[in-house]
Image 1 (cartoon, one colour):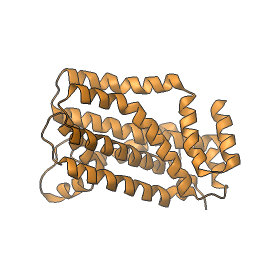
Image 2: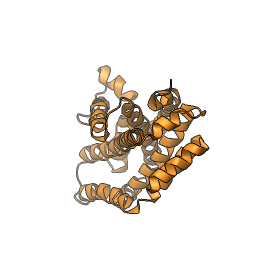
Image 3: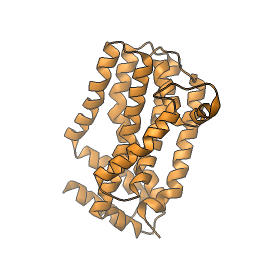
Image 4: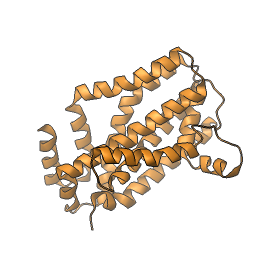
Length: 249
């Protein structure tokens, strides 16, 4: 009932910024669900850090967790909004679809960042992280969460219910993370090295490994540049494909 009232108010005002507020209000109206979303990543994180797992495997798990949190959450949210008729109502408002969806994914990214903040706090407390490495990790995680939300929203534009878009997101993320070297390591030559250079997940993986005290492929400066580029590309994609997500003609 709370979410329905929020959606109706949002459409009446027809303001892109209302989508930003909607995502935050919907989350605030479900504190129990938010607590569970915060607790689950911690359950995965604490054993790895307490058991001093190899940094390669820890970095891989934390990167996959971040990508899934952003992309899956956004895809399911958009799919449910389509089922409820919210996207259809937004599609007929006179506001720019790209700007509206950009506000939506920005708010969704903030919620995801809150969900994963305890994970970062535990890493900073238990791992031998330096200040530059910590800053690089925070910024690249925010950027990857944002672009993952964008990708999830775009994938959900293909249609289908929450279960179907979940599979679609996995099909998209798996090769992106593979090309980023998460599962096999990043080779220093060949086409996979070129792919890793433009894959944001490879930089997030490196940031996690460096924060955990391991030997990473990319240094802190490279990660910071990648974070800015990733955020810019994500914003451009959402502005350009907002019409597709809303299915506005």
